[in-house]
Length: 204
Image (cartoon, rainbow, N blue to C red; front, side, top):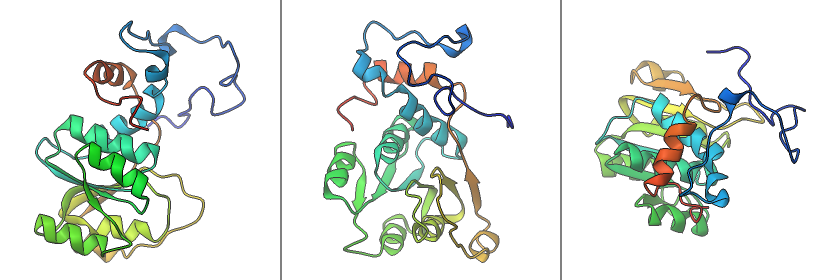
């Protein structure tokens, strides 16, 4: 892991300027088949693709995504591209639920049912990999609990305040919990997936 991990636009480096001079290895050519509007999703989609690629997910595995904001929806799409057999999407917003349903996700509304119990019941014990994308403290233990024994939780959110989990949920169940930030070397893959119809600009 690079201790100086950074990207253009994070600091005062011209990321929002009309023109910006960069090293050639930081620039990617937009295929003629993609519009500028579509290509603008490359950066957030890269966050999602990187999160899925850094996870233990294998084709045919089950997954849960807690939070269907822009990154959460893109993770649902990245999971679909990675071959997840079932994707459970936990979200309160009806509009975001509808978007995830269009992508083939199984909707779990925490306002109507216990999300952890519902997903455990539908998977006979939990998903292979869970993704936390809300940054809401109460959701962190839920997203950990929904992973099966030996399963994994990937934390994608950036947090404004501490959150609490019970360490025995990791120890006794032999689960793995990891965090991801940004992306690394995935822009070309994202552009390829866009060319195949994934990460449509209409997704968000």
